[in-house]
Structure formats: structure tokens, C-alpha cells
Image 1: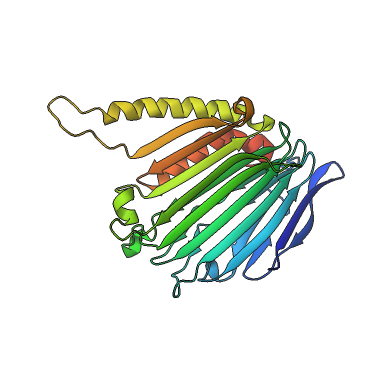
Image 2 (image 1 turned 120 degrees about the vertical axis):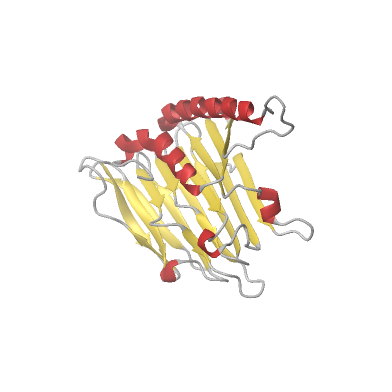
Length: 289
């Protein structure tokens, strides 16, 4: 399978896209300017022809972020995955390599799978220990609310791996699998929650964001525990409309993973806007604004 290719290198003292190749059914859009002129970051938007991923589509591309470079990989809107034809599964594969003092920020809008859709994505990131920085936002909604669809797709699978360059030793391995069961549907398991998200923050350039998000999630978790406690005279605890957890990973807790379940997609957007706002000096603009 032919793969797309992106290479970001330092040219004239700035992060510069030196190679950009895509193949149907997707393409890249690279704005000439995002934010102030002194911003040292390359923004890359992934676009699918027809506005979404069709049953059986296979998308694969690589991105290399060179030493001292910053790149942002994002979308213009949610990634729509159309209904499955037969048992065909659509797939997307991303492989990324991040150099010394490099920063890759993967901040797409959520995946929205239509009824009966089958979708699998794999993202592999190779980093230099203690020197590369990385943000991954990986999230999915329950579907098309306006059509009455709620977790009505057949399969959603998302795998993220962070490996050490050189020996490919794993630092972070994670898979989310949502599949319709014979006796229990995805909707039954997700109950009132309409979106789930995972945020991974790794590396020396992002330590300040790690500290901030850990403090904020601890406060949220404390509030959640209070909400779960049944009130006097009540046998049932109240279900929070926004659940969040946070845990470190890697040597000396160099990375942080945040997991979220929310009753609205908008609440996750607001959370991301708030927590990533301090990225503006590095990226030129705040993510998800």
C-alpha cells in the first residue's frame, strides 16, 4: 500500500515542511501562516475527499519531525466514517518519528462513526528518550445525534503506541475497542455518555502542561467522588456528566495520560481549549479555538 509522507526540517532557522506527498482518498492542506510571523510551527490539516472515510478506505502516512522542529497535525472538522458495506472495515495508519528537541502535536477533531460503520486506526510514535515532546488527542463521539444514532456503529478500534527510537522498546501502549456484542450493545455499556477521549502528554517541552492538567484533573476527581456519594435519604448516587482520570507513565513519570467520558462533546472541547491554551506561544494559536 502506497503511503503519504510528511517531513518537517529546520531550514533557515525555522521549522519547514520539506516534503509533502498524499494519495487518494486523503490530502494535506498546509497554511502559509498560522499565528504571528515569529511562530516556529508547521500546521498540517488532513482532509478526506468526499468529506469522510468510506467503507473499505485505507489511509496510511508517515510524518518525520526533525531535531528542534515543531509540527501540528489536525483536522478542519470531525472525521466522519460512513456506513459499512458488508463487513468492510475502514482503516487509518499513522507512523511518526520525532527528533531531539522536536515537538509533534496531534489534535484532531473527534471521530464520528455512522450507523453500522467499522473503523480501525493505529498510531505509532517513535521518540528520543527524554528529548522528544508529544501531544496526542484521540477521541470519538457516539454518532449522529440529529439522526437519533447513539453508539450505533459496529466497530471502533484505536491503538496508540509510543516507542523509543533505536530499539523500539515500548513506553506507552493503549487500545480502545468498542464493538457491538450479542448480549450487550455499546450504547448499553456507555449509558448516557456521548463522547470519550484520551490525551497523552509527553516530553520536556510540555512539563508545565502536565503539571497543570494533573492539578485540574485531581480537582475534578475530588468533585466526582462527592457527586457519587448518595445524599441523605437517597439510595442512588448521582452520575457525573463529565468523568476524568489522570495517571503518569514512563520512566520517572515523564508522560501523563488523561481519560475522559462526557455526556456532551462540547464539554470535551471546552476542557481541551482550557488545558491546551498555554500552547499558544509554541504553536502560534491556541488549539481548538
